[in-house]
Amino acid sequence: MTKRTDYFNYRLLTHEELALFDQDGYLILKSVLTTSGLSKMREECMAAWNKEKETFDPAKSWLQNSLLVNIHHKSSTIRNYYFEGSLVDIAAQIIGPNIKGATSQLTFKMKGNTKPFGWHQDNGYGELDPYNALTTLTALDDADQGNGCLWLIPGSHKRGQIKVRQTEEQKKSQSEIVINADDSLAQPMEMKAGDVLIFNCWMLHKSDGNYSTERDRRILFLRYADADAVEVYNGRKPRLGRLVKGSTIYEQVRNFEAKL
Image 1 (cartoon, rainbow, N blue to C red):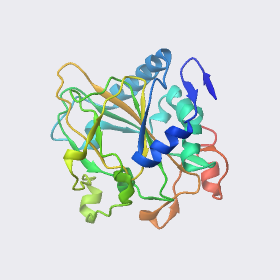
Image 2: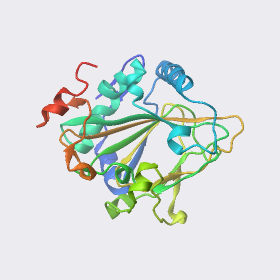
Image 3: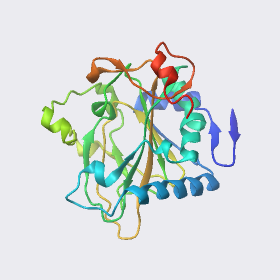
Image 4: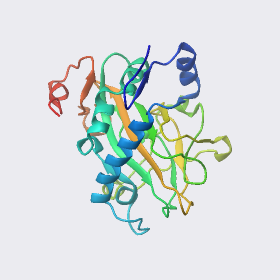
């Protein structure tokens, strides 16, 4: 099945792609955004970013410099993409028939932001059970080694959940979770604007600083999870997120952002 709207190209993963995802833990999907969709998404993202963010400040935290959470509250194009776009059916192929949105945020590394971000698993920052959440990174700029593209270690998801101990003070300060990994096994995830990188919640990944003086590296981070996924770190309460496909046993998930 392949369909196209003005903003998004729709498709499903092939059997070969699903086998590769299972083996390597990631895939790069080409041209998920149309030219019009990319332009519209950039426009709305930058309006939200410029309203809330300033230039890079090395004294500020990663969150302050590089993240803008709940971007679907601020952009109608991203909201449509997150709730009804081309990634929802792909998430269902990997996770199962019942899907909710678990995270939406901008992950920007603007020119001048040379701060690296160490090896980690996304499920280390928000451990969800079942352990099949899917990270999707939509490139709003061409991303390469010059402007701080992502690096990952193919197959590293097979290690499962890696426990990293943090003190309460570290958690409150939102300090980075850094895992020891073999850099020689890493591969750069270079993408064209409009491409999407998807990977398993246990995938080890990192990014270097953006050393370009002319180019930003702007990424839209959307995470999908099983509709009944719970937060292991929070008394196994259900992770709240918009139900985007199928059903859930949790009324609070069924009602969450249902009218947004």
